[in-house]
Structure formats: C-alpha cells, structure tokens
Amino acid sequence: MLTTTDHEIAGRLAAGDEALWRAVYDEHAGVVYRVSLGTARSPEVAHDVTQDVFTHLWRHPDRFDPDRGNLRSYLVTRARSRTLDVLRSETSRSRRERVEGRAAIVDDGDIADAVADVDTADRLRSAMAVLSVPERRAIELAYFGGRSYREVASELGIPEGTAKSRIRTGLSKLRVELSDAGLVA
Image 1 (tube, rainbow, N blue to C red):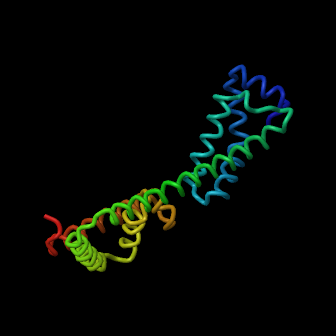
Image 2: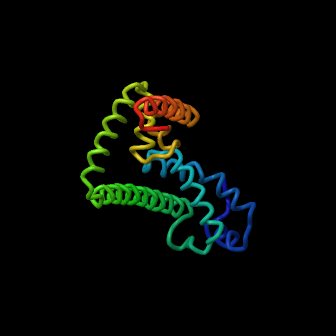
Image 3: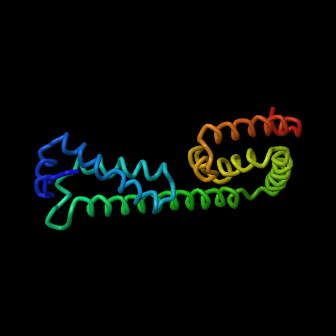
C-alpha cells in the first residue's frame, strides 16, 4: 500500500519516478480493470483500457491534479470514460459498416445480379445447414456479425483457440459444400 500523499505521488510521477509508477499500477490496476469490465462486459476491452489508463498516467502525469481529487478516483473516472469511448467507437464502426453494406447493395441496380445474389444466399444458407451449431454460431458471429475471433470467443464464453478452431473447421466444411454447389472453385 502506498504511504505517500497524492501530492507527493503527482510530483514524483511528473519527475518520471518509474518505481512509484509501478507501485501505483500494482495498487490500482485491479480496480481499474474491474470498473472497465463492469462497464464493457469484455475482458479484452477491460485489459486494453487498463493498459491505456496507466500508459496515459505515465505519459501525462500532469493531468492528475491532487487538488481536484485522489488518485484512485482519477484512475476510476479515466477507466469509465475510456471504456465508454471504446464502446461508442465500436458501436459507430458497426453501424457504419452496416450502412455501407446496405448502400453497396442498394447502389447495384442490375436485377440479374440481384437475382444471382439471392440464389447465392440460398445456396450459402443450405451449406451453413451442414455445420454443427457451435461452428455455425462462430461463423455467423465472425463473418456476418463482423466480430474478431477474440470477440467471438468472449461472446460465446469459450477460449480463443476453440473459437478459431470452430471457425476454421466450419469454413473448411463450407468450402466443400460450396464447391459441390458450384460457387467455389
């Protein structure tokens, strides 16, 4: 437990005291992680936010003003704010990708292409039916939901390696099915 005052901590951090920064990290990283995890519900986001909060403290120690509040409150507030920024950014990215995807479909005015797209979609649905439920769910999240394999693993509550394996195995089965349907060479 740190026995120095917040004013001393601010001064020593501003002077580049690496040992003190490590002590601050050791004492407060857990609460910063838990605050971010409680907001984001994602261990990956919480880990990244925790790293970001302490990197920011190291690079900009002058932003912590002990006259405005204690160090723990500063770090917790920064964690909440940064987590919300990440969540908003991901929501905006996802929304933008959906809108761009719709625009690409709407801009294509060729009816023959639209019919071909519907036929392809039907064949893809049929091919997806051969997959096991876990494989299908992982592929749907990754390819139709725009999630990374880490996000797939987090959402399904499985290890990252299992998510990768389900996606890889499912894609291999799809390749065979789509090849038989004449959609893939």
